[in-house]
Image 1 (cartoon, protein in one colour):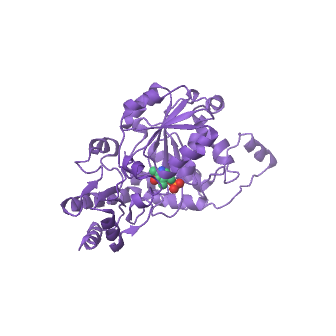
Image 2: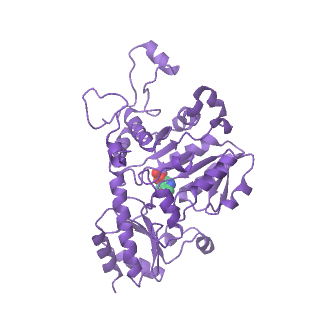
Image 3: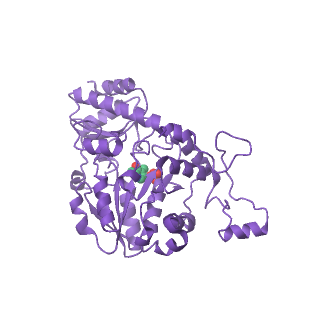
Amino acid sequence: MKSFTTRSLNIAFPKKDPHNALAMPIYESVAFEFASAEDIAANFRGELPAHTYSRTSNPTVEYFETKVKTITGAHQVLALSSGMAAISATILAVCKQGDNIISGKNLFGHTLALFEQSLSAYGIDTRFVDTTNPELIEPLIDKNTRAIYFETVTNPQLEIADISRLAEIANRHNILLIADSTVTPPSVFSSKSLGVHIEVMSATKFISGGATSFGGLIIDNGLYDWNKNPNCLKLTEKFGKDAFIARLRKNYYRNMGMPMTAHTANYMISGLDILELRVERCYQNCMKLGEYFRQNPKVTRVDYPGLKDSPYYDLALKQFGGVPGSVMTFDLKSEEECFRFMNRLQIIRRATNLNDNKSLIIHPYSTIYTEFSENDRREMGIRPSMMRLSVGIEGSEDLIADMEQALDE
Ligand SMILES: *Cc1c(COP(=O)(O)O)cnc(C)c1O
């Protein structure tokens, strides 16, 4: 098979461009015209596929979806306004009041808030469990359980679950396995080959190509029989294998107004074309920083599942080709030391995002987790002495020099 980048650069447009443009034009148009009253009627009956209104579908967004679909070998792909839109639309499409999902306990903060606050208000419950310990999952499954949800690498804990084992459990109970793969983008991770039914992702992070815009992706790998989900069942008769995406397009995505814009899709398309290069560079930087931290006595601890002595190294190798994203954590002696260090940095930026082209650092204990009790933070593995570093594409010598001058007495 040709390389990720070669494939990404050579995916045909859904329709030939009238000017033979090499780059997909940005179709920033709300509505699309029909040649006759008969045609528009046929379109509304579902007999003449065409773009009608960009909150439902748009040519530039469709091209981005086609690229992701072709590269990942997925059955269907939907691009949305943000990662949170992708996650919330997915759960709403497969659950109704009285249903529940089982989720990993260490989650992106707003996903946790979605599950604990937003969805619970509509009678959709979440049962939290340590997904790195799959034996704990089965006892939580009942007749109203619709899905197991997890993140491929949790952050900032950097834990990795055994995905094949999660898929085995999900399949045994005819429920969905949903993975948030934001930190392990498609150039290093094939959710389909590991049996994940639905992959959701914040394209805002790695794919946008430098934190330019918000976006989300829902990827249906085509591995799930939608007859087994009572909420999608009715649609299988008409839409077959497309039941889930049809439920999204004709309901949540359209009715709750979650579309990606054409301008954003343009950023995402360019970002995808250079994704493999950026991820590889970030990984090389992580490995060099790992070595640097190891030999510096002021750094008391380093975590990155790409490092050989990580407890998750073998799973990272098996599931992500040894490239478990580019988020790492490291510890200094105390919170005060961390603050002093962060304030002296000149190249590495203090910010809360992930997978920008720029390296970003944050002290999770005093920021993202500040509202949690000391005890909760301890249980979640959020140490006062720990910093999270999202490693970017700068030169590794420059990153190390910045660390070195900031750690200096
Ligand atoms: C950022 C992030 C999200 C949410 O994505 P947005 O595009 O900000 O809505 C979801 N999951 C993970 C793991 C993230 O890092």
